[in-house]
Length: 127
Image 1 (tube, rainbow, N blue to C red):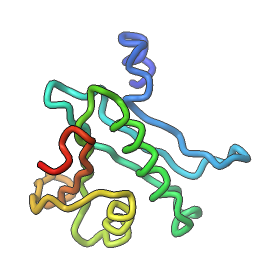
Image 2: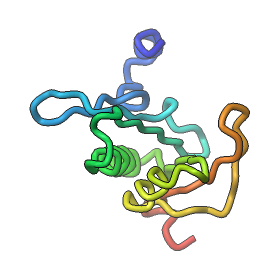
Image 3: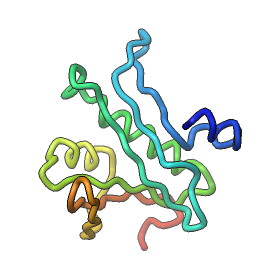
Image 4: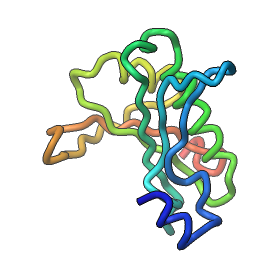
């Protein structure tokens, strides 16, 4: 699927999935966005760390790097993440990565209610 999308839009590199690896090349997880930002200049980010590498700070590093990368792009004003209320580890990761809860819940048919957290770029800070 990703190869097909990149063939159709080679400049979309970076807006899909990234592999997270240590400096020795060992893959520890992944993360990414659902494609380029739309006209609303917002993205939703997702991330995952392989079970054997959890609780070592990789999730925070992945989420921070992805959000920093996206918010450094002129076409992005806001990055958001949605997390199940019972996933306390992911909620802590998001907070450490500079995300703040919006007070909104988003309903997902598979996962139920999700807490919405966001990190704003310079253009939206203070709003």
